[in-house]
Amino acid sequence: MTFDFELLYSLLGRLIIVIIILIIILFIILLVFGKIFLKRGIVIFPKFLLFIIDTLYSPFKSIARLIKLDDHLIDDLSIQIRNDINKKKFAKIPANETLIFLPHCLRHKDCPATLQKEGVNCTCCGLCSIGVIKKKAEPKGYKLYIVPGSSFVKKIVMENKFKAVIGVACHEDLNQMMMLLSDFCPQGVLLKKTACYETKVDVSEVLKLINSKD
Ligand code: SF4
Image (cartoon, rainbow, N blue to C red):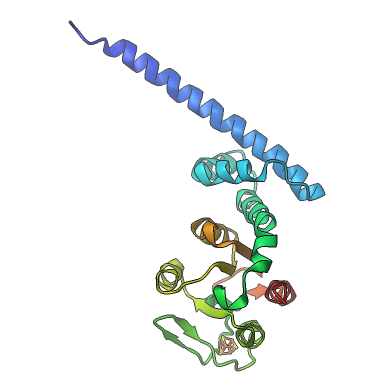
C-alpha cells in the first residue's frame, strides 16, 4: 500500500485556508462588537471576545498591521473589556489583597530612588506621580511595586499572595500583564504619554480605582 502524499498535501492546504478564513471572520466579529463597545459602552459576549483575543492575539495584531489599522486597538479592546468584566468583583476584594504595578518610566529623570530586587524603591520625593499614588495607596493596605519589566512582575507574583491587581502601562505591556494575571481581577489604566522616562498617567483614574474599595 502506498501513501498518497498528494492527497495529504491537498487536505492540509484546504485546512490552512479554512483556518485563515475563520481567523479573518473572528477578526471582523471582534471589530464590529469592539466598535459597539467603544461607542456605546455595551459589551456583547464579553467572555467570548476575550477568549478569541487571548487565543488569537498574535494573528489579530498581524492582520491589524497588514491592513494598516491601529494595532493598539486590539490591546485597548482587551483592556477595556477586562476592566468592565472585573469591575464589580475587584471592588469587593480588600486593598490588602491587591497589588499595584506602576511602570518605572513614570519616574522623573532626576529620581533619587534606587532599584532593589522588588523594583524601584520610591522615597516619595515629590518629583513624579508615583509618589502621589504611593502615598494614597499604601496607607490603605495596597502593596505597590514600581517595576522595570515583566520579569519583575512575574517574580513579585510568585512571591505574594493576592487576589486582585491594578496595572499601569502602555497598550501592549498593560494588555499582556492583564492577560497573564487574568485570574486576579485585573484593572488597568493606560499611560497618557509613553516614552522611556517621564511618561504620564491620569492619576485621578488610578486613585479612583484605589478608592473603589472604600
Ligand atoms: S516620587 Fe518616587 S519614583 Fe518619583 S521621582 Fe521621586 S523617588 Fe522617584
